[in-house]
Length: 381
Image 1 (cartoon, rainbow, N blue to C red):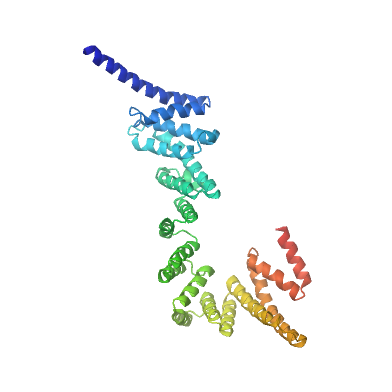
Image 2: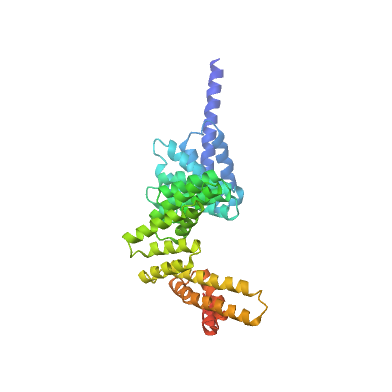
């Protein structure tokens, strides 16, 4: 009986040593770039009860799979996920801190690679996998004591933004809202997150909540044209256009030097097709701030659309004299639009709509030299 017990103990000890040898063999494989061998040994150690809770095993598993991702990815396309999760596991269970410092260094490398692997998966529309990788990266941020991730553009805000993009690609509305709400909570510096959230509620026909998010966005990004436009449109859709108009008019009484207030009221008037008052407010906005791109652009669009409407009717007129009379009216509107588009283009030369509007207007109005100059400029950019 004693012999049997002795044999069993020896066998057990042999198994423990064998599994530890698998870990060591995996570690040795890294010295000779034997990645397939390293994977074989570490996978055996991963599933064995004698090494499954060994921080050394998780440490080397992380290193082996990081090397596979960096040097021979074809062996395991999922290597960076396994590496990152393994190194985190090592840090979680390494009570004696034998591998902590080194594991943290490798975890930062793995996490950065994991984030950029997520970007690559997003590009090929593997949104689910991209989202899973970003979620893993998010869990590593707590270990970034030296801000290594932050220096590589892997911040909490950025990770949540790309988690939103992945959820959006996957059409997962619940997660989209969750990640946008987190970005709002983190004060992410981009007005579009409020637009995105508003659009989600608009899709659900919850216009009231959609408007609330736009108004919340305007509290933070007061002069953002997209948010202003969204606020005007939603207010009108909810039948609150007159309320907003009254409020803006009251605000102008308290703050008559505020160019944004005049621009918002101009947009409301334009939506109500009161073009005379719209033009008056846009121009008042420009008196206060001539460099206001949005007021210049809106005036240009308004006059351009008036001209296009006149020409749309004129094309069906058969009488040449009457047609020419209407064309003259249209050209006058196009001519009126021109300086505002030019001002908008000067303020923001990268805005494509303003530039393309000028390229359409110049030939129509006989401004050949200006057309050629702008065309050459845009071609050479």
